[in-house]
Image (cartoon, rainbow, N blue to C red; front, side, top):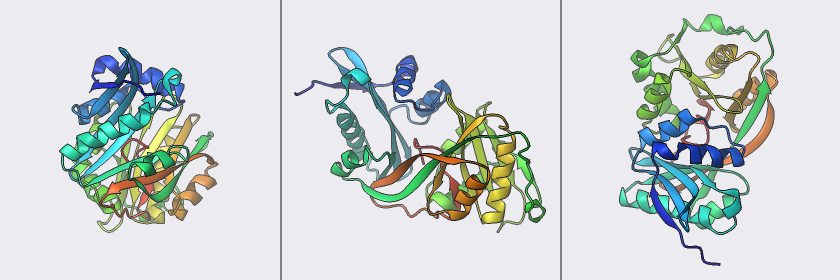
Length: 290
């Protein structure tokens, strides 16, 4: 059955819609997440309307030549009518007009065939792992003596984390990192050791669990120290971390802390591929922006 769909820009007045749809999907986003999407790309967040009713959302964020599509949500009463596919096509048309070379997204196993039909190809897998962190998580691991210092991060450290982030993601994500650091509920740490040894980790609360990530580290010692420090802030809380399956040290850290697999994602690309350094990428920021 053909469904007549109109699209319009999303605004902050639509955040209750976004929260309702993400709750139907059992996702973890907060109102702060929706505000971040809108502020990072105000011309790239869209609402789908059917017969005068708001029934779906999607968001886009552009980082130079690389863009992300996320938050493809459709009201449960309007699913299986092609609305989600049309939302993605609308986002892709927008990005084509911006001459973006690369479009990326994280797909579930169910969504992967839909995105493949739209020209996306799989790059690598991530596992969402979760745990309720027990009392006694130490902010320091046995490897901490190798690191000169780990300090809370503010805007003054942005240039350093942008440098580490580009090495891992091959993407200029400064505007995302700056926004995450500026948010009052976020926690952020940066190493201040030798330039060849270091990284950063951010984490923030969600509606269902704390999202740990993004996290980038130069090697296993640094990664373990950083994630231990981040974990210490969330003792007694449920925590999610999205780890590339090719980063075996990151998986070992998570398993050692009691994390178990909740679900998996496949990172997909349309256009020019981006070659992430997965040994440096210890945790994604979440499915929204890599």
